[in-house]
Length: 252
Image (cartoon, rainbow, N blue to C red):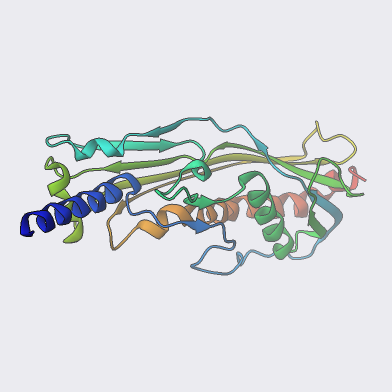
């Protein structure tokens, strides 16, 4: 009887360890904007709004399709580390099949940009338009998402399943890297092929991950990336609206 209990305990322990390794203790998260912290939109304001109506449309998705899952390899003793790579983080799943990152970048990123530009008071009207039209706007803001990479590196310190004891003791499970790369442009609604303003937004964050730290940051970083890269973009856009109002006048 004791042997059966011991075998059952070892089996449950192996299942737990396998779950830790394959999921990396990731926590499912739903897109939230503005990110927390700070929980507020940017404190970037134009002196006065330019008299123009802007429609922000869903961004074009130009991301890759790679989904490499190899973190299970660290269960093999003497295997130094293994890596999961996702070009589209919303495709990553927890063991129960639940998406780890519930986000629609094309629409969610565009809505975030619209919220920030509206809050900054750059234009008299800014709205998100779910489609390819302009809803009677003077200007349209389009974007192209080139990357939303998520790279997860895991290690069990060459000890296979036994090495997960170090995770429980607080040592890092590995490192996560989040990247965002996208372009946005503002153009006359009458001719979107002739942009009056363009900006490239790039973000990279690398951080250690353990059972007790770094997990939420890994999946919440995409909202942070959008807000951080919007700081210089908004400053540049405000400068355009202030110094080159003729561009906006010509769009009407």
